[in-house]
Length: 88
Image (tube, rainbow, N blue to C red; front, side):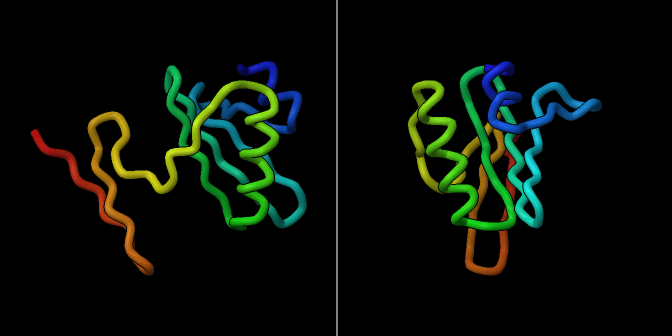
């Protein structure tokens, strides 16, 4: 997986092995990978969609849509806000 991400232009963050960044001009895509879960975000929806297609061409993946739950953190997304919560 790491090799493929580098092939499509991602660079691994030097401080966190799960964080990858791809910048092309004004477009930024950030990918967080933990085992077989991915979070993909960025500053342009069309560019993110294109990146998802590139990733899907390289390995099997399923797009589950907006993030709702990740590693014990619940995420609520609203038009102008994102709320995160973690129950103990």
